[in-house]
Image 1 (cartoon, rainbow, N blue to C red):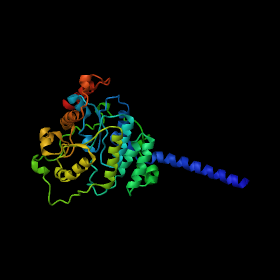
Image 2: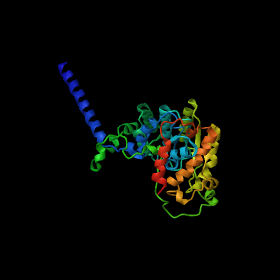
Image 3: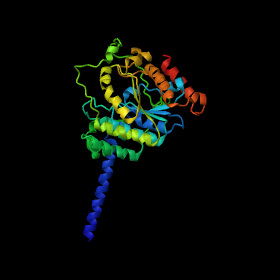
Amino acid sequence: MGEIKKFFIRGVCFLLIFAALFMGLQYVLHYRWANEDKLYTRYMDYASVEEGSADVVYFGTSELYTGINPLAMYNAEGITGYNLTVTDRSAITQYYQVLYALKTNRPKVVACDFMSLIDQDGKKTLDELYRKNIAAMPDARLKREMINAVAKEDENQTWLALTFPLLRYHNMWNTIEEKNFRPDLEISPSYEPFTKGCWFVTEEFVGDPYDIVPALWDPRDDAEVNLAPDETAVKYYDLLIQACRERDVPVVAIFPPIIGGAWLYQMQWDVKEAYFDSRGIDYLNYDTYEEVKRMDLNWDDYWDNIHLNVRGSVKFSEVVARDLKEKYGLTDHRAANDLTEDWDAEWEEFESRYLTQ
């Protein structure tokens, strides 16, 4: 019995030493996805806002990340909000973002771009997007559930590799930098809280401008376009809608004014509209020639032919604010004077730094 006991103790000691070495190496040998899009910092900022400072919370992709400007919405119509969109698209990660937002605060409206409804990229691997959202998720239970969902739905992902990044990134030795020794979950010192999660793009239009005419929205008969809703996206968008309805929070689909590839969105619009109608979801489609003209958008308002720059975000956000306020009867916090956070001062800071150049 003495030999068996010694063997058992040695085995336990070996496992403990191995686990300590494994976790120590994993701390260093993995990418700092949590700092992508400053997502963890934005989660923490969102979680700290006062009651009433997030009437509408926005989820989706980079087109809304650069386009939805909550400060401009407050200045124009007095409604508040927070931008929790990220670059790239996945209905799975958007669903868990919404769950976190609903658990942390209680917005009056959830807005989402539903960009994943129709798969435009042929089931491409979204490794960086998954890891960014998993690494940045502050809620441990939601993080575990997201890992399980991604591993189940994407054949390119596994639970082990998502839970233990060292299994995938053990060959990073020759690329180690100072940042590899810093913690994943830290507040970005460069984040500006008055952005309310928006990405203020200051660049001028890159590329060669072309005439913005109705023909840009004409369907292309010779184009091979996928018009089938993605089953995984439908599943998780349905869960997103259900989670909001259980909390009496309406969901609205928002489509930003994307000029590049406008013909593609036009060709897919009937399918998207049918989905929203079947689920009883409101939608605001700003990706039409008429809406672009209503907002007086031109190439000076764009970074490229898809993403708005900071000037364009103001024009777009003012119109969205007016439409949301009218549709949902949102409070004008300027008139109510019910916020202790000084949104007026933050608007003035934004205006002086970004609009008077």
